[in-house]
Image 1 (tube, rainbow, N blue to C red):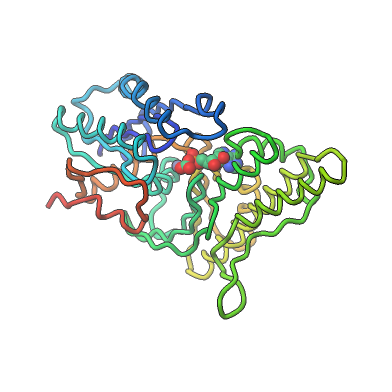
Image 2 (cartoon, rainbow, N blue to C red):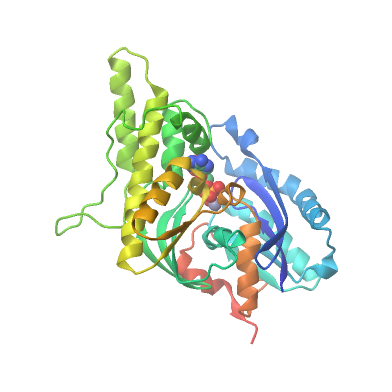
Length: 349
Ligand code: KG4
Ligand code: ZN
């Protein structure tokens, strides 16, 4: 059994957790959302400063909540890519310093690999191979999970990520930041069939459409045009109906692609990860389609859909059990493909 203290500071949550393999001993998430709300989005420099102010308290709280001391921690991990460079640096530097001071192995973790591992926290029997639908603020992809650290990207968005589309549509509907949770709540009072919107098909050069890739930028523009037209017509914009129609379109688009991909590759399980995995419309659509096709869909508990450090610790514990550790010279990277994860590690043997 491996107990890992993990740190996540890739964007606007200062998170520290202690996990024992797939069991969460403590999980602290200090959200900066109220700080960034006044700017309508995340301000990178402000995020770094907030992480600096919060990180030490969050580490102390994680140890206290788990009722553990440093002698009971086997390794220290932190998200090192992808994300905001200044924000990542705070968590990574803290983790490397702790690893040095307490003489523990250190592991850098890919943020998206963490989102994949979030499902393991509630489904401890889950093992590869399976399909992962990653839907966060910065990424939307269908990943073939083959083994610890071994991934193949089968589908992705050609432009905006699903979460980004939620945030942009919320902004144009003047609903504030972050958009996903507000649209999700509002959509429950609206009619999802009120407006027909494009589901974001991607054309292939030889004709037809890509089975797994999607494009959400056109959908966002369609919502903008719809709102402009409704305003021109002089009536009140039925915001709940627009939100419900938009959410339904995203959910249908993601569901169709994920199901097609799982069936084509003979994978019987789809694990969802990332902030948009919290979306009620997506959960409903995917669950209904999965039953129809005899597939299993797994959603992490809501608190582990959005950014947290427990998912990072879970990924690190698995890597450590495979003999992987990272050098203390490891740096942060704002972009890093999930298929490049193994370059973060060297083998203990
Ligand atoms: O995974 P995450 O916490 O951070 C990134 O790694 O990006 O995802 C944040 C994204 C934001 O775009 C937010 O609007 C979206 O997830 N989100 C949601 C919901 N909760 C968060 N989108 C749709 N429905 C939700 N309930
Ligand atoms: Zn994330």
